[in-house]
Length: 169
Picture (cartoon, one colour):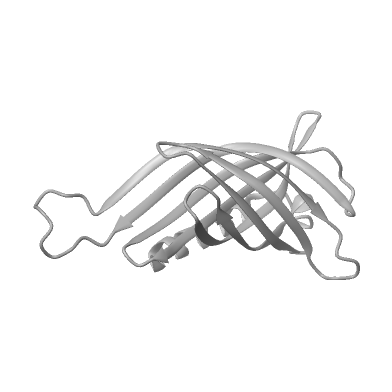
């Protein structure tokens, strides 16, 4: 699991270093907590946001990772690579919608007497769809956000996430 966390941090750092200098001033990163409504699982994670300009479209890149490790026999990590469309650039209230790629890695702790040939890991690829908003926290040095996240994969689910983003100026 530590290797997955290190990999996730490396991917986020790569995104930070690969953004243009003008966009680096707007790069944001931070933690989030959530609750998966379909699986009744808590989740913790981190994500980043940075500007992505494609022609006349001002989009937001949004890579992130979620960890579900509260079940003693199953550990799940989700890696998300999303693009967001902001409806507003205002700091006070900025709703958005988004979509992207989901890669889910699950590790199972098999009992010692498990039949031979059972897999102890599983990887699933799917799509993310999300809707959310960030909003002002007054003079605080962070930007809170809340979002709904629908994952379409073998076992689709819906999660509510809330977190804070810190500008990396």
